[in-house]
Amino acid sequence: MFKHEKLQLLIFIVLIGLQVLGVLGLLHRFHFSYLPVMLVVFFWGGISTTLYLHRYLTHRGFEMPEWLKFFFATGSAVTLAGDPVMWVGDHRYHHLKSDTDEDIHSPVHGFPYAHMMWLVRKPPGFRERSKRYAADVRKIWYCRLWENSALYVLPHLAVATALFFTFGFAGMLWCIYVPMLLIYNVTWAVNSICHMPRFGYRTFDTSDHSRNNYLIGVVGFGEGYHNNHHAQPRCAAHGLRWWEFDVTRYVIWLLEKCGLAWDVVWPVASESEGKDLAPPSNEAVKFAPTMTKAATSL
Image 1 (cartoon, rainbow, N blue to C red):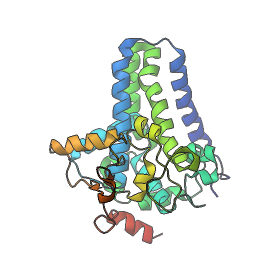
Image 2 (image 1 turned 90 degrees about the horizontal axis):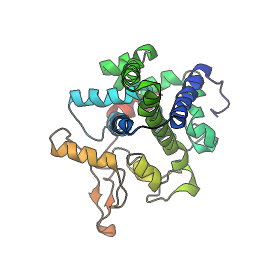
Image 3 (image 1 turned 180 degrees about the vertical axis):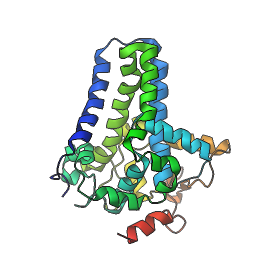
Image 4 (image 1 turned 135 degrees about the horizontal axis):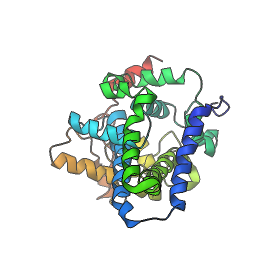
């Protein structure tokens, strides 16, 4: 349905350009002085995508203070993860139409489309539809501000410039664009690989093709346990079994222990699986009201 839409050339060039910068970084000599900054950028950008954009902003799996929300929102902007309004709106629509012909990013349209090309072949009017699905997000002043691309890139440009003057061109590439290369492709792999039957396992019998993929789960801060997530989207934990390593879950747990997260939607113990965990029941947890209202208005 979507893969034959007109290519949005400017967005395509930007996305490919960012990937090229990451690859160019890998071709330059690495210095260990880059490593601490790389790890900070990778963790800040990655956890800001998974914890803030996904588990908090999209699904409202917990609550946290405003200053912490802004900190994570800025981390997602530094790595250009996508402006929050579109990110949330697109993802909520994906859950509503998962693996149907109307899914905005599903392998039913082919792997390349599900992985990246959906970002540059959105049909006319889809942006306005996403805005309706993310009406609650547009009430947040900086999310509304970052709908303007010229403003959204400012945190990224500020960090990239600081890295350039500190480490030089090669250091800038290694410290920000190499981490972004990994963050992008792991995030996109959740949309593509984690919806392909041959590349994972299923714990729950959901109506879509979602799969749990352990490798993507580990590298992707827990996002790869995608079947678990589709079984109960609001659950703050995606890794449910003890061996499903979920960094984002552990960070949320730590924030809760420090009083910086509350109303966390945790999974409950499953009597049939002993120490394994299961998502909370549908009776106990519902989607954010704003999402439900948006869905019924379309």
